[in-house]
Length: 102
Image 1 (tube, rainbow, N blue to C red):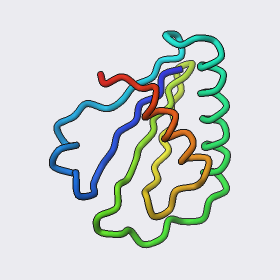
Image 2 (cartoon, helix red, strand yellow; image 1 turned 120 degrees about the vertical axis):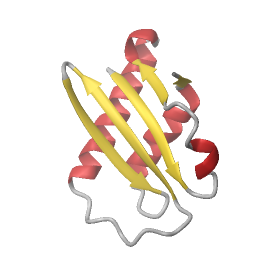
Image 3 (cartoon, helix red, strand yellow; image 1 turned 60 degrees about the vertical axis):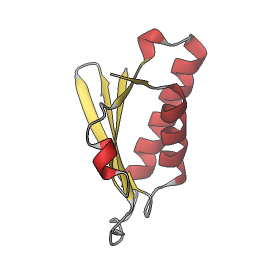
Image 4 (cartoon, one colour; image 1 turned 180 degrees about the horizontal axis):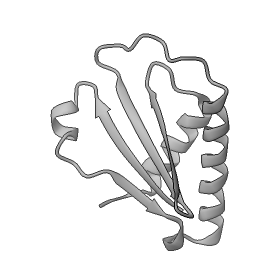
């Protein structure tokens, strides 16, 4: 599984625009870390499926796109600081700690 994190908006938008996304590939992780990432992705995906429509966007809020690619399929999870589920937040924290810039 390959997971990519892109960050958009907020006050840091001009700085972030020039940075590559953060990427984690489970093939490069220890088995326990790969299992934890899979669990976090599953929880965030499940939470997003039952989530209500996002609220109105705040002008300076950060938004995050997490793209999950596995077995020829991909899905994109998008949330912001104003409407982030706890499951998405946990995945976001994990990715920020473990990702490498491409």
